[in-house]
Amino acid sequence: MKKIKSNVGNFATAKLQAKMLSILAIIALIVVIGFSMACDGYEDDTTPAHENQWGNWTVTKAATCIAKGEETRTCTLDPTHKEIREIPIDPNGHDWGSLAQTTAPTYTSAGIETRTCNHDAAHKETRVGSPKPFTKIADFKAWLAVQPGNTAATPYTVKLNVSDLGGSRNIPGSVGNALFTNYTKYVSLDLSDSTITSLPCDVNNYYIGAFDECTSLTGVTIGNSVIGIEPFAFYGCTSLTVIIVASDNGAYTSQDGILYNENKTTLIQYPAGKADSAFTIPNGVTSIYWGAFGGSSLTSVNIPNSVTNIGRSAFNKCISLTSITIPNSVTSIGNSAFYYTSLTSVTIGNGVTSIGDSAFYYCTSLTSVTFATGSNITDFGHNAFPGSDNLKDAYSTGKAGTYTRLVNGSTWTKQP
Ligand SMILES: [Zn+2]
Ligand SMILES: [Zn+2]
Image 1 (tube, rainbow, N blue to C red):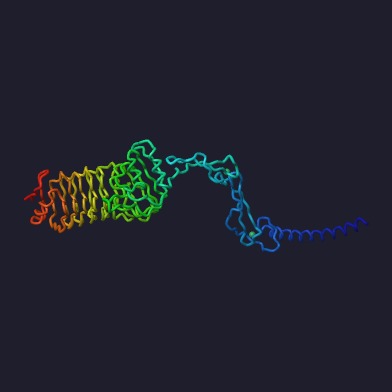
Image 2 (image 1 turned 135 degrees about the horizontal axis):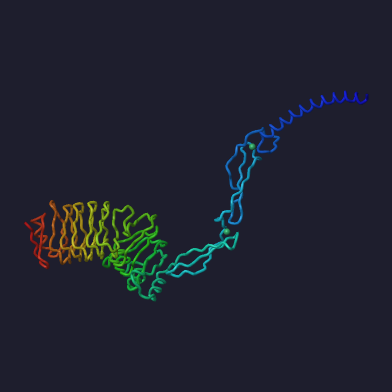
């Protein structure tokens, strides 16, 4: 009986248990739902259940060349919700020590520099350093004096870090003078770290420029701190093939090795050693600087209609130049502009009003001069032409037209 009673009691208990179980199940369900709504398994008593709103991944531990790194993102709704992920080893993640010279540079060859990784001493990097620069012109001069002679094809490439070139080429302590007096030693000059405010020209002494007729100068590199290039700086440098100007130089620019002012309105220097036989001056150039083509071996030069001025000695000693046409845009031709060339004929545009002294003097082959229709030259320089006085007289009455003379003749005759 007790057993039955007990059974009855058990039945009642079972009913109660069933009721309890269903309540527990509901509670459990609520807990499960609530739990799954929280951030990826994090229990959270304070933040309402939400979907994570992740911020950006940020590197919290950078990877190195030997160790993985970590990056983390944080839930914007609850900063305790975080996710972390690995960053793979970064093969470039070295921690370099300082560069040390392992092969010393010389004036003509770059040294080798090495640095070691602080994470792993087996990680090393080497690089070619810079040649040792000359910081004093006297050092350069003394060094050059003891070098063997070489060729224009195998120049000594040297770097000069100076703030002053020591004056024009005829000053004994100048860089130009060092080159000029060591003319069998070809040199390419790197001035890219030089800060020079003047490449001077000695106007009181035959207009001698900084590297005037330094025939062993093969190339020049100019940095952003070289300004003040005065006339004839590179005049008659017959081995000079290239002038390079840093793109951030605010005063000058170069194209195809030719030196111009910054906005390319003035052609300053055509390197006289350039091998080309013909050259067309870019349209837009208005001025051909003093001595610009001096000593070059060009046989023909095309002058565009933008040019208004041909400077002093611009084509002086261009001994291969045989003919030239000066467009109507040109108004003045400087002193000695075509002095000592091989011109046989020249056409002078009708815009020219002034021809400088000796402009075509010593052009012994010049036998034909054509003044374009409308020509009106008011300033006919002294010895402007061979037989100049005679031509000036003939022109004063004949004006436009073609005038000829015999070779070595001093009488110009206007052609009908
Ligand atoms: Zn969250
Ligand atoms: Zn390393």
